[in-house]
Image (cartoon, rainbow, N blue to C red; front, side, top):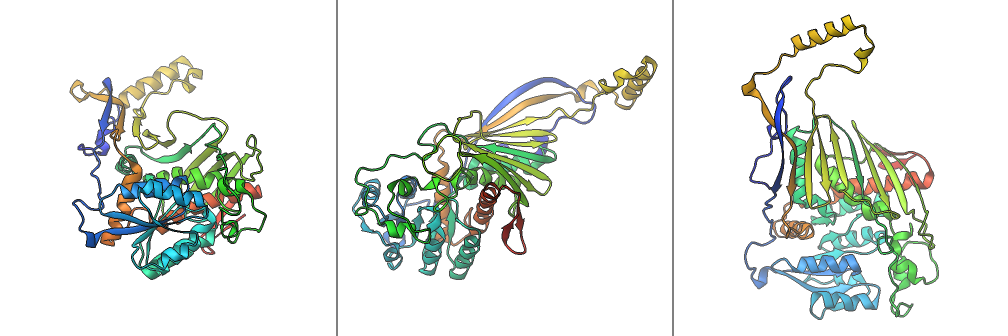
Length: 455
């Protein structure tokens, strides 16, 4: 965090009637204290050994991140496609034990934790099995594919005393910690609205990934991939572009909303699913057989705050991705790179617009009375007003590594990690509510007592 102590005074203007004698924009470089999983070389007896289950693009990124931390060793990998078993070993830089059946990994006694980066519809089953096998788990987001799964994961983690961290890195990000500090200081005043967006405008961003030329029923365990999803003939497009199909993933909410919502929950301290969600959108451009929309826009209702979240695969907007609106200031979140506070001018001003329709005598009497009630402050009380204050992460800051290190610390110390299953379940349910509203063309309401979504 910054060496400066962020308090409400840092942002507030002087009291009623004060005037500014200048302005200044300010930039502060954040200095995060790296929460290293191990601050010194680790003896072989204390090394953490792990395996990866699911090694597509994100899975390979996760295993590579874990291997950057000291005292960590990868020993095995499981994936349903032969090519990914090879790719995982290339990323690990060593020969690994390989299998297409993740249960063989969980049977091993020499593995401390697993990374689960499969399709969404396999998360709950694998995570629960891993907890029962005594493994800690780093699971990719969103944590679940269906609402009941989240409560099953929470129960499994608690029953077996396992550390479960879900991979929405903003939960450990230094920028979001600073944004929360500003919010908690009261500098924003009353916050009533938040908007967030994450847009893309290219084939890769729309999950139209190339299909490996060797993809076939011999190199891919198709039946295991389907799991509890509806049975259908082999289709390599569904395997490699699974996010576009509701049988296996949560579409844009599960891919991108969850990042935005994690940041919003972290900053504002939400501790429950939204009360309501209303979503609209459609499949306008990427009509390649998918059933997930390429544009979805959702209004969430939280107590006292309305949150708007948008994802669009048909235009790449610029200029940050989250804004928090308060009566005394605005927070602009520039992804994981920076946060800017912009104060609102809340100094009292005499009314001019509406009283222009009054007779001159009444107008002059009103202004005279206003000046009497709001005398000019003494000159020695005038204060410079900051137009904005930006806090930036260092150029070499890695949010993914910070999140992984937080998990590894939890594995070693058994202290709670930043994004355990309870928190991750709130954001996952938020994604499910958006999809529920979109699919049913109706308002989605969270029923806390029944732990379900209703319309």
